[in-house]
Length: 326
Length: 286
Image 1 (tube, rainbow over the protein chains, first blue to last red):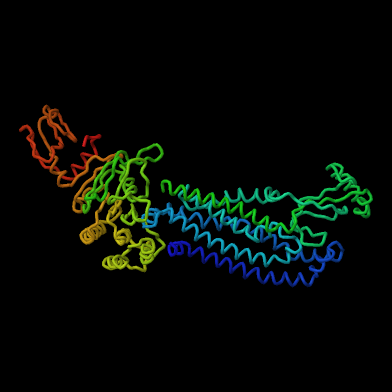
Image 2 (image 1 turned 60 degrees about the vertical axis):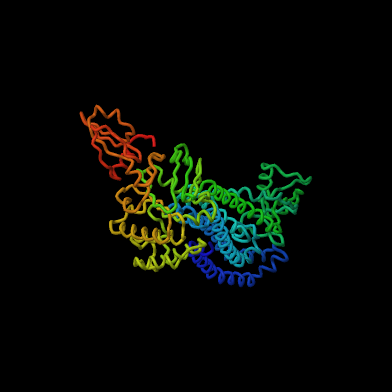
């Protein structure tokens, strides 16, 4: 089965290696440049001591303007990629056998079809995992300076680093194996698996992920100099986590209503020094966030979700094949 | 002696429709069996059940005493050439043989190479670039190299030109002679079968209409022609064609020569005519 699986997937292995080589050729030199800029702008010192000062904000801004664009493009280009890779590899396993009629050849050799499928899935899963982890390593290295500033929870970081990329690809792969079995065609199975992949992947990123753990909160002096989003600059020292929201609290610690907050902010913006105005009212700022230290916990949860779904779909495909076969 | 193939009350249902029902067939070892029937008769379903590609909805099918399919041992006993002889088109012939070696414990690669060399089929060519006849030969070589005890061929001669048909039949016959393999082969072209096969199973609409050695079957049927008035008195009629005064009957007489009323003229029946009669007639008691 090892030789057979290698023969069936060797073109895909070569394509995977070519992709790794391409990504390395593009992003390793670019990461080198980012490191140079990181040093020359003195970003490290700013992050370690005081990010709030004007000098440091300017330095951070200059650095991020140079690299944040490409770092975010990276996430735009590469977020559908695991879905496509997984779907193309997975749809071939059963979809192509049915489409070309070769299942009748494959499953009348002396390897029972359940073993045939399980061994093929295991070997291909190992290959996908190796390729995805290699890609994740390159992305992580490239993004490291940018991650120092914006944290590893930014979409371009979280979706490409650690285990998440591998989890996504395996999920799309499993969906395509099952789709190929149900549809008996390669291209429709790729389309269906990719659609299914996006239908799970997007809600997880934009809705579910922030609920993996109860967020932490931090009370600090009020300021309007805060922004949300992937390119937000940190206002306090330390590796940034994932900021979910800011709320103004009254002197007794209760959050202001949305209407009251809007009025206060409006009046503050009219003054010469908005932060001093907020302080004079005795307000506090509550930051709700996922701490940077939770990165690996979140990665494991994300991987468990997609890897678990993949396992369920693959088990279903194997069960269906065992039950009747065709 | 154990039968090469034994089906008992075999049935296969797809959704609500039965593709095969109450099928009981016994094939003695060493015979070459023709499985005949129109499209949709259940031939392919029966063959897939024998190869273990399908699990029966009811009944059972045994190959040399063991359940068909499922285990590696059961799969190794049967060699199968599916309809349209599918091959991995991107693989070269040599790679297909290597695949056979990788997936079958007793695979005789040298034998397969020898047979393909005798047919001038180049090992370095991709399967997709071979002619239909060559693809059929490669499929047969792969199936035979498994050293199966039962060889199952689903419409092996369909889509082949006359020369390729002749070559394929020759390869098959020499393999049968050399390897003492039992063969089950299906076709709807009856003329192909007479030279190759010694047994016959006629299948129509999912059930067995006729099963026996071709010689015995032919000996047990007669064509009678005579006056229409007398036709109702003749027992064992398989098919009757009546004109105004005259009737032509195909009659199952049994193995012994039976006395028929002298108004009837008796003729021996040809295989093709016999098979057609069984396929045309509504369910006849066997």
